Image 1 (cartoon, rainbow, N blue to C red):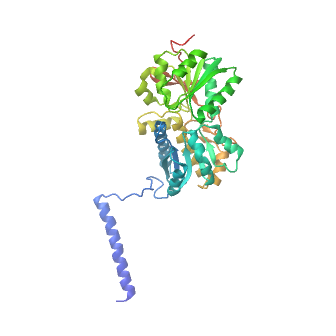
Image 2 (image 1 turned 120 degrees about the vertical axis):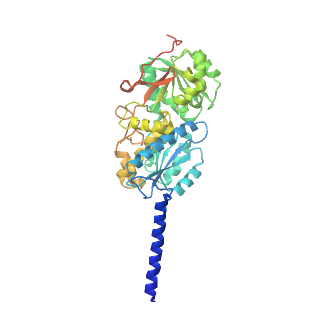
Image 3 (image 1 turned 90 degrees about the horizontal axis):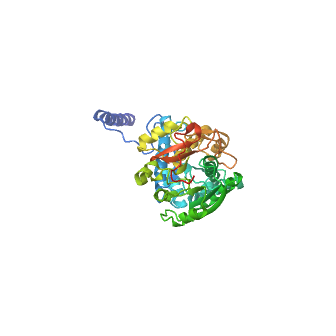
Length: 419
């Protein structure tokens, strides 16, 4: 037999063997193992586009991080159900922002990450952003509000051109506080109490600047350790200064303070710029019941008609988590993924130098509002863009009280407040 015929016979046997294996799997109903990077649906077996979500998975604000994870996965599922990014599946990997920058960046390199989103904490974002800039990857900050982050873009737009924030700047939080004092309380004085961290300190100055233009005077401020449950010094300050309003950045201490606020019938209205405390509806109900009633909080979003994406996002989140999102960093974290996916699609590339110009010139619709970035790469604040919400605890429920077109309840004074 010639060598050519022997080769043909071997090839035929090999092909029959392959076909037989495939037929046996089909008849037995066995499932073919799916590659770990393969996402079902229209995107098929194409290589995924990987984005890292850096959120609080451990520590005092892990509750925020868990909600961030659900929000990000909800949006990723929606993107993949619609065909992915440029016909490729979106893969999201989650990293703990408490990890050292070197550890996060090493994992990102191994995972083939093309862009980053997340950060609840200003300190961790400030620590890592210079290294991400060196790698020329887009970093979309959905939580950390320190002015220093977008100030870095304004000061050196070349070195830091990949840094964006779709979350609120400290001045946007301050605008919510100013609106509460000026329009809802008609206040003339306030005290500021906050957890002792960089964002809490930067926020005090920005609030004071806005309050001054409204004729509202700060009469005292006090900082406490993160997670503190002893508020003797806070109560002393309130009793001494007798302000019209308390503006708080309570963080993880929010629930403990809510108990003190109600038990001692503190006679001063309060707004908590929440951040891992009083916006977490299920946690508040479970841990303090109605004792958060009458405290107002800032929110970025709620299940109200903000954009065409808001209610579908809330429905999908509720189905996945069995509870509402907090309406703070979680919604913005989901929107960060949506913005990045749309920008990459518009750019037709994962190359950050092609994605950045798209981010700079386009507007993006998210669940929390319409995103448009200014020259410092901060999402713009104002009507038809992002303006946030104010809510108040009433009868154990978190109710939106501002703006008028989205509110679910009127503002309700506590019976023990001074007239």
